[in-house]
Every structure is written in structure tokens, then in C-alpha cells.
Amino acid sequence: MILYDTRRSGNAWKVRLLAGFLGLPLRRRTLSIDRGDLRDPGFLQKFPFGQVPALELEDGRLLAESAASLQFLARDTPWWPTNPFAQAQALAWMSFEQERHMPPLAQLRLRLALHRDADPGEPRILSWSAQARHALALLERQLAGAGPSGWLITADHPSIADLALYPYTRFAPMGGISLDAYPATNAWVDRIRQWPGYQPLFPGQPDMDFATSEAELPA
Image (tube, rainbow, N blue to C red; front, side, top):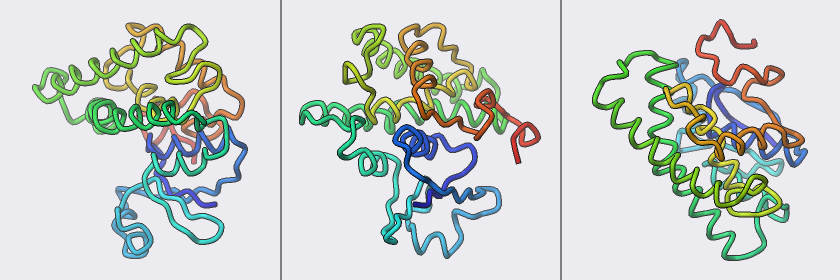
């Protein structure tokens, strides 16, 4: 199975995390946005959405979008709940992540840490920060209600909803938002990092999640 990704993609990281937790062999084809790989005709012929992550299965079938990939890989495993209502809850939180959680956190990370092309006092940055803090407050309330060893929607085992929310929550400090203000969320992040099979954003360098310069990154 081949995963098409980019080095810093939080959405692609979700798929790598689940594959690691499940012990699934995964070959990476890491593309470059700057080089224009996502606009390459060969890539677009396979994946018209023009985005990563994208999966190429062993039988040649192609699958785009992180949520679809997570649900497909998690079927018949503890990462996908068996209870229909819990399944619906997982989908609700994954929708929340894509619509209200990831967008402001991703923009803050991009503008303040990676591109560094914005001032923290700009109206758009302040707006994204307010949206991100609201999303994190909702996540914090849910996790606090689950208790110190609970997960987002399940009691004893994390689900793909946890994985969907993890990367951009982990990146929040890059956008100027400390997770110290969200203790249940901070503890949840640590629990995911300690789960057997955890895959760092940059392989072999678990402390490089917040790297902002290409010079810092492994080859």
C-alpha cells in the first residue's frame, strides 16, 4: 500500500499514525508542494482532488481524503467502534475537525511558524486564534468529561476520531496557542504519543514535530 503525502501534512500524518498503530506496511511517496507535484498531470490523473493524503491500495484501487482513508483502514479493528451511535459520533467529531478545528489551527501554523508571513496582531490572525481556541475548548470539554484515561468517544480504546483530532491539536503551539490551558487535551496528546506503534511526524525524530526550517529536518 502506497501513501502519497507531503513532509509536513497533518492530514497525511493521521493515516501514517493509524498504519503504525495497526502494524500495516505503508510505503510513502512524499511529494513537494513547492515543486508543484500536486499539480502534476500524472498525480491528478490518479487523484483528481489534487490533495494529500492519497492511498494506492495493493490491488490498484485509489482512495483520497484522510477521513475516508482512516475509516477504510480501521474497519474490523478496535479503532472503528462497533456501536452504530459511537460510529456516528466518530463521524461527527471528524467533520468538526475538518470544518472548525483544523482550518484555523492550520492557518496559524502556516502563517506564524512555517511561512512567517503574518503579524500576530493582524485581524485575520486574531480571528483564526479565536476560532482555534473555541474549537480547543470544545475538545477540552469532551475529553475532560471522559476522565483521565478516556478517549474522545470511547472508554477503553482510542478511535479514528482521536487520530483525526490529534495532529493539528499537537501543532497548536506553533500557532501561538499553548496546550497548558487545556489540561485534559494536553494529557490526551501525551497518551496518543505513548500508544504502541506511534509514528512521529518525521520518522526517527520524535522531537521534531515543531520544526520550522527545512535545514532542521531529516533528509
